[in-house]
Length: 400
Ligand code: PMP
Image (tube, rainbow, N blue to C red; front, top):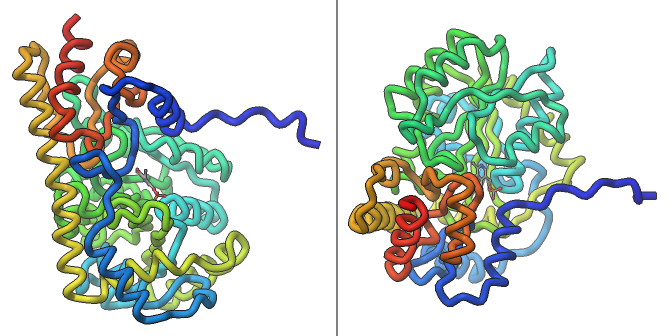
């Protein structure tokens, strides 16, 4: 029956992990992983998460089904975290928020909703480059997509003019996918004024903003600061769609917990949208998993625990910021003639180093350092113990 099925493309990140695992060199470093590591290179369980797990355990809860859209308290807490406690959508209750299978599930559910309920077939505009799964999800849903200019290889920063020009020529009603903070893979985020400018263009051209917020708190260490872009758009009157993930900012990768919000003009529309999201969920996985959402709800609704979590997220963000500084200083200290300011200008888990595919090949073969072909490194894979070696290796492959 299935003999004619073609082989699917292997997942690049998992491929890197396999090669890294097979390498027997004591010097090997994996800078491909998209997950936070502590200064010993180990997975990290946040103290606030441990505490929440203890509290949940003590409650001796049952394992009944969750409501189709997830628990009300969880959904409200997600929306408040993203938009702010006293924001207009929260006050007016015009948000349709459902629990999802982490950020990926939220993106898929949101794009599926767009595909089904938008009167005309729409184009999705993705930043160039973007997370590899964005175009892949569009393909699965047969949603046509285009790319708007985002990263400028010359400055290794945001191409504001290119992005604005491209968005100005997107057809009315196009879906504009925006990384709310800590852009993956480049680590390049627009500045506040640039977000304001994008918001204005998107409004004037009647485009539809869909935010992917997979790293709230992870970029700057402040959950409010990292939600700045989303909040600017909401203040400007956009009815945004938002995909949220708790994989990174709570370290709940394998729990697969996230949320999708569709902002609506009024409560009645929000109720209708909510009802259709529930129908979708019912046909895909019936109802969401309970463990991860219990942890998130416990943290976000318990003032003391939330405070602890804010400290935990900041500690992760700060370690990454410190590693960026140390890496830049060490490469410059090694006598590199190139500019490395982009390492500290960029933000979040990833850094677009500017290494060419040939240099990536060399650093992997000669130095046992693993990263994606596009030169992206996960700063979370750098530690005080390996930073000098990584810097020396980057200098080696970029200087000869
Ligand atoms: N969007 C972006 C930009 C991401 O980097 C990620 C995580 N790699 C996600 C969404 C979703 O991740 P998850 O499904 O694990 O929440």
